[in-house]
Length: 152
Image (tube, rainbow, N blue to C red):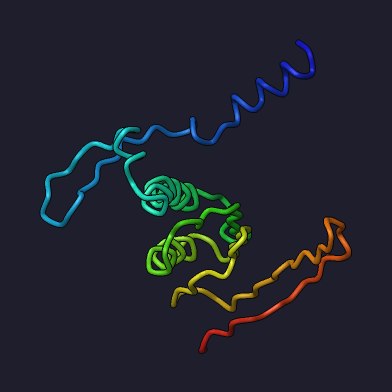
């Protein structure tokens, strides 16, 4: 097996989207009957609704796996890349509440990493990387740090 074939094989084997099979149902409005989620219905959702429909089942699996961990002292870290694009503050807060119920450390990347801070979060530190580019040339990147302290 060539190196490229081996890499392709590992990507296929470690594709987290294939680790679990979900049958997801949803209601369009309160009181409506449950509908089975299909790709066609998912693609009809707004970007934020699609993101939430994909993230919620993964968070449930993480919570179930977390309960089976053998070492309760192990750090619980979730890292997500651009996971909240298109999701409004209210939906972000709901998702982040679920994340902080599972993990005590959450790292998010994205163009707008300034997220809603749920009540169950700890102190939150934001690092903003600023690309100072002039005339297509990269002059420097600066880092701004801000900390949101929760009332204790």
